[in-house]
Structure formats: structure tokens, C-alpha cells
Image (cartoon, rainbow, N blue to C red; front, side, top):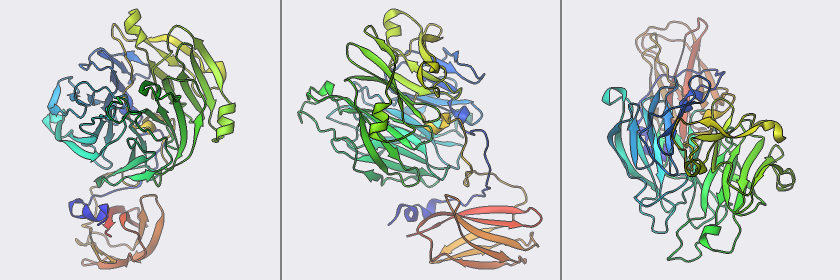
Length: 495
């Protein structure tokens, strides 16, 4: 039975409206970052300001989530969850990452579409051969504990074995999300669809990744695939494969790929030819430039032009920004909502320098991008290896055109009821509060219209639509009148 059909009984019909969005409505979800040894940054003023309130001390992966107004909700290292008061959240000992395991992309948080209270934390312990948990998710309900949140479910298994790679982008319908990872010891990318129906446990599988076979089946400690980055537009992926640590004799690789945000498929993959051992990597906010640092004894920070997305053009575009035989520029890079790229720098702990690097104009090609070492102070705290993982689209410079599943309760809605029976959708207006002719239409999650009919309401209006031609899935029925009345209801056509 299809996932949509399995979830049909648990759907709560909710009122929806179309909304034309201008400035990115999710940009303030990344107003707060907590990472490293008690380090933090607050972007709520429009400028990065050190925040030393964080309770987390973590070497590598972590995640931070704020609401749409920029209010801090929670943060996690994949083992524990802390609330906005920096206290342990009830049931917050999730232990998605076991002791002694230090994945790079170990935790990422994603809002549930259409529900401002529910958030998912995904974790992966994919760095070890003896994987204990695999890919799991945990559910946070922010309506509990007086708005401070509670972990209501944890350690829900999703897939195993997987690498430590985790990244998330917005679905092509501009409402849902894709969680993307890589299956362990295969060439398979896995993309899990996250919608208002929940987390679909059946992933979209793409078979064109780099196969990360262990060099010694019983002793290999590392998976190879360690970092997965996406462009803020969600259309490009960068996979870092570190095979040097496995003593395979093979070089490390960066694989660039196209990602289809409508279907969840990965394609058009090719390799960037670089030296071994990778540090920070990131796409520019406009998605046209890819930054990557690499090298063992001589470390280089390079730009690649990815506006023409093919192997020859990208590899020929390489521009060196920095070469050093002393230390890296950044072990991780990420876009913030101020249009800059920030990095983490574990050398700061060694050198007792409490600051991190920044790329001030990352959409600019060449040295005009203005890289700065030790540019942003952390007020006595140290960053370590990784910046918080989040949905890459939250730092996108422009917003989606529409989001049909954005929830808004309207006070004058009719007593509208929907019922699906086979290939018929029954509509019951009820209540008799609407007396003008209505235009009814059915659209899918991408805004494509499938049918349109006129309805003349009465106190007992009941009509039906044929949905024979619709594929199983989530749809929206829209009603509108000449007076400006409008309302919408979601429904699911089962398998």
C-alpha cells in the first residue's frame, strides 16, 4: 500500500491559503547558531554577534533550530537536545549518536510542513563499521512544556546502514523537504520525502554516487562519504569522499551532482580533480560558485564556477584564493542569512584564538569575494570542526514563489467537509453561510490545476468531483467567489 494511503486515516483536514512570498519566510530560522566548545553566533540584528549562552560542547556535527520569527527553539549534537533556556529538554537524551562516534553530518533538524509545533531531528552514526543506530529520527513538540518543547518520540529507525552524510533541501513544491543521505558501501543516494503527512520511510534511490566499499570488511573505521552539501536553491549537491583515512591507496574525491527537487533524484554526477584531504566546502548563496579547501601539507582554498554544470567547464574554472603550509582556512563552511559564508576553525583552540573566518562577498568571483581569517570573534569560545546543519534553503537569498500548504485559519470559513470515496471527491458545504456562486478547482502540491467547476451553494449543498485521472497523493481543493471569499482544503487520493 502506498505511503499516502497508509497515512490517510491520520490526516487532519486543515484550512489552507495560497500565499505569494517575497523575502525568504524561513531566513530567520537560522538566526542562532550553537556549535563547538560553547560557541554561538546570533544573527538577529543582521550582524553576527557572539553568543556564549550555549550549553553544548561538541567536536563535530550539530544542529540549531529557530522559529520563523527568529526565536531560538532548540539545538542538538545528536545525543542530547537543549531548549531555548539552554536546559536539557524532557526526553532529550536521544542518543542517536552512540559514545565514541563522531560523524561530521551527524544531526540535522527540519520543521514538519504545515505544523509550527512539530520538528524532526535526524541523526546518523554512519562513521563506524559496527553501526548501532543507522539513520534515525526524533520528534520535538514545541507546544509542550510551556513552549519550551518536549521530545515526544525518539530513535525511530529509518534506514541502515548509511554513511554519516546528511543534508536537507526544500521540495520543488516549496512546502515539503527532502532529507538526502548516502547508503553505506553502495553507490546509492537516498532521498526521503518529508511532508505534512510525516516522513516517508521509502526513499527515492539514485545509483550514481561514489561507491564507498570498505578496504577491510572487519576493520575499516570510516565510511569514506563524510560530508554532503547542497546549493541553497537545492539543485546541486557536493559529496566529499575521504578514502585516505581508510588506507585504500585511493585519492579523496569531491563529486558534484544535480538534484531534482520535484522527484528527489540525483543525476549528472562528475568528479572535481583535487588533492587529497578536504576541509570546508560550500556553494555561494546564488548557487553559482563552489568553494572547497583541500590538501595535506599544502592547503588550498579554491573557487569553481558551477554556473555551467559539466565536468570540463567546472574543472577548468578552478581559481585559487589561498595557499598555506601552516593551517587550514576552515574545516567547515556554511551560508548565513546575512549573505556571508562563515567557517569553523579548530586551529583557534590550538592557537588560543577565539574567532572564525568569513567570506564577505561569496557571490563574487576571484579575490573580490574578500576572505578573512579570524574575522568574527566568539568571546572566549572555540568553534571546533562543524557549523550547525540546517535546511540549505533557509539561507537562500530569495523566497519560493508559493507554498500552498501554508496553514492559516480564517474566521469566516464555511463548514466545508471533504470525503474521498474511490474515484470521487465529495464536497459538503454545510451551514448555509455562503450564498454566492463559487469556482472550485483541484491543484496538486506543485500548483498544477486539474479541474475547475462552478458551484451554486445552498444550505445543504453536496456535490462531487471525479478524481479518476489523479495519481495517488496529496491535493488541494480551492473555492473562490467574486466577493473575495476563498478557502481551501487538503485531501489525499489513496492508492
